[in-house]
Amino acid sequence: MRLRSDLAFAQVRKPSFYVTQPMRQATIQPLRAFGLVESSGERFNGFKCSTIGDDFIHEVCGEYRPSNRSVLEHLIRWVKGDDVSIRTNELRNCLSPIAPMTKHSRAFLLERSTTGSADEATRRRNAKRWIEQRRANPQVPVDWDLKPAMIDIDHWRNLHVGSLFFKARDHAIAVLDRIEVLLGTLSDQRLHLNKPLPEVVSQHCDTLQNAVRDFLAENYDPSADFAATAFCRECNESSNSQIIQNLLSREGRVLQQKGNDVVPGSAFKGQLAIADTARSEEEGGGETSIPNEIQWPDGISHRVRNLFLFNLDMLGELDSWLAPSSVSLADVSFSSIDLAVSTVVISWPLGLNSSLTKLGLVRIQPKGSFLRLAIFVGHFLYHIPP
Image (cartoon, rainbow, N blue to C red; front, side):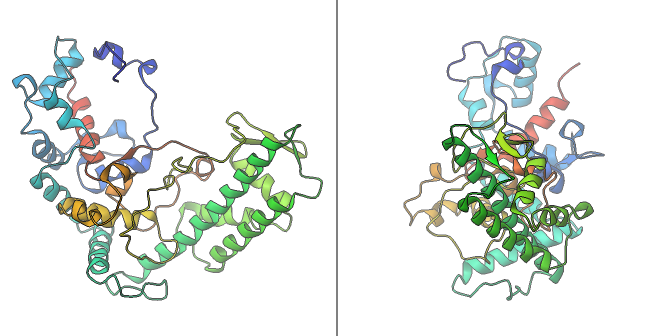
């Protein structure tokens, strides 16, 4: 944006203007879960701002008056081609997802995160009680065998089985990563599946099998059409070569199979992905380590940790929590979905094929709120004149 001089809407709306980041389904789930939008389906284009969403926009944007207009009016004039500036500090401070919200806005969003009578809202309320208990009593032991009193049995089992599945998924990705790196060192860039596999690849396959067997041993799968079980069974073959073939049939972008060989695909790089690269629609990439981290059950979804941070942020206490550490706010980032639905029953991947691809996800800073930006954009688009 800093290198662009023409910021007219007619120019900005062109696909060539910027590098898009995929808006995952998981990213927009909070809008519906918090009652900020109305829709008959889950597609973002079908969302309409609800009365509650309008109230939230007013809380967040009401105090800003770019060029002495409301933010909505200012942006509509920009879309219509009027000569308005979108570089004003008022507009930037209002729309920036890394700018702090007002106390009232934070309280509004925090209240919405636990409002409702549906099972999802109930589970969020119970999870909020749990994370507050963990903060007050961090010395209390945690383990999957020690269910918190406020979390119901089914929810706890979902979280546990979900952690086992994501361990298996991560090990599956590790197998593919190891093969990619190996091919990058070979002159012919081919791995022959009809010959003994390199020891390092076999070791990763063995680790993957142990992980999927842990999941399958639970004999419990809340995913749609038992997709998680199907995936884990594909990774539990007697032959490591067959396991690799099954993974390639799902992935197919970075690595491909030609005959009995594994060869580079269209997205092949020949090196490990950087830590911040997200690899699935469900979970993001690597996250900044926070020295003040509370202990959680092994492998629990990172969403629970981020719900903990979200709660602190909405209470205006995130700065003081991070202050004793050497981590600055600018260094801490997490996936935007984590600001919302973190503790509903484990949200299984929407597509296991895409869960094995390396996607770039939207990342934001904890002092801001992607929700503020997303809900406003949805409201704004709905009001654009025909």
